[in-house]
Image 1: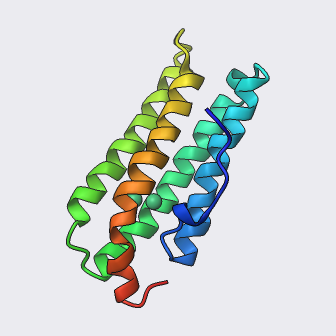
Image 2 (image 1 turned 90 degrees about the horizontal axis):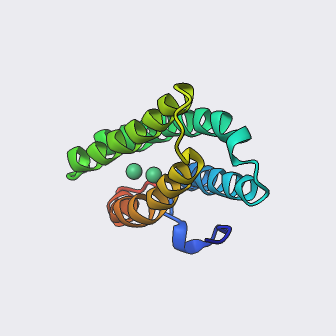
Length: 136
Ligand SMILES: [Fe+2]
Ligand SMILES: [Fe+2]
């Protein structure tokens, strides 16, 4: 794996949402950096708190626009949001239960999947819809 650098490939052409998505890449980079120096476990609790807070705010933003502009794939999209947030919450619970598992690795994998399969695929699908509605 490598650090992620923001580029136009990640952009959904909506300023407010791009700013939020940058935070997701940042969380990935923070965890990756700490894991490389063997400190993944020390930052994991805070990182998961930040990730869940991010998810709540960010998904609310996207879903608010989807409802406002009557995005036809709202249900399907929201379902993925709920699953992603649930997965992050589950890892945090396992951490609180002091479970012996490589939870930093699970979190990094979740972030990677989130970026590759949700941000770059699911979110990318709404770009032209929102842009046509004048949202940028
Ligand atoms: Fe998103
Ligand atoms: Fe989304």
